[in-house]
Length: 421
Image (cartoon, rainbow, N blue to C red; front, side, top):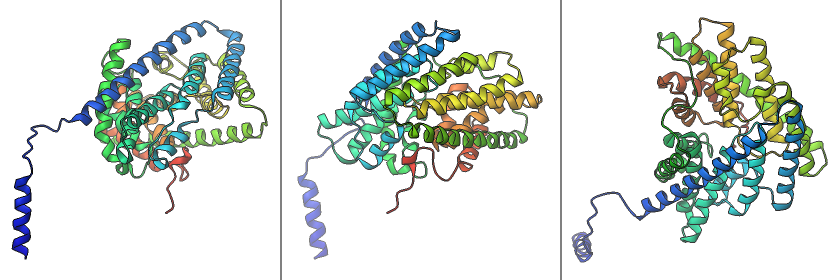
């Protein structure tokens, strides 16, 4: 009987048409590439509009920054109130993990309009979260149009998220890994089948985004030159990262404290965003470098000759500004603002201990605080290596892992919690 079964199997194999495909290239590749092109176009248009609005609003300086940010906060709140609440990064992670990877494109108009006002007026949140929401939901929409279901639909949504994140940071590998790590910090391999779609979409997205805004290749922040000085550098990286992780704890608890305050204010969302705008305007009036999300301000920190007292003030009030922005209803992402906090901390350490290499201190603190808050040590390492031009990969990895393992047990992004089965 066994021989007969084998014989029948061989006959069936011979009856089937012979297929020959020399490469792994398939129709799926074209779908991922098309999604990346869409993501790059949307990211490019968003960035152009954001740059235009920012240039229009940055002329308001001094005490005028207070009413400008208050009015922009009010307008953003009215958009959310009447068009709909687009949610935050918590909602995106929840939908990917527990809603079969479906992101609702219906929230995009509210997210785009409100985030443009919040980021362009000077809120301490960046455009990465809005881009991730819009491009990720575009992946969901494209999958539904083509009647794709299950894990393939989830993979398309993740690939869309990666394309949006990569367009802003210019790191296809880092953006792809971030879209996996942010979902499930302990078990990123749970969604690892999405890594190839994410990489393909990220590469095409970055290419289109670079063409639209004439982006060059290379680091965007002027980190001082670093020269390896021996094995003690790894120990220093861990020590600096411990300070970064401690700062991450301060940020997390400051955010929770502000959240409790705003939750007790029984007012509509537009009243809270208006109040948040006033507070952010006051902080920006006294400390102008805390205004905006830090894309250009990080270079001002690195190049400028800032004294120790001002650095401490910038560190404290930037943390407070991010916490107020996150909890008062303003929309945006907090990754680049956290890099600003890490830069401030690294420069403080360098000024206290002048013999310490400033590049190592800054990059280690940037890596640790982001890994502590977002639980993304792998992608943080790759992102910072790309953004800073810090080519010594291992010290950044040491710092990222230190920040990750010194993070609080309860994650800052609540939807990253383990699911009890």
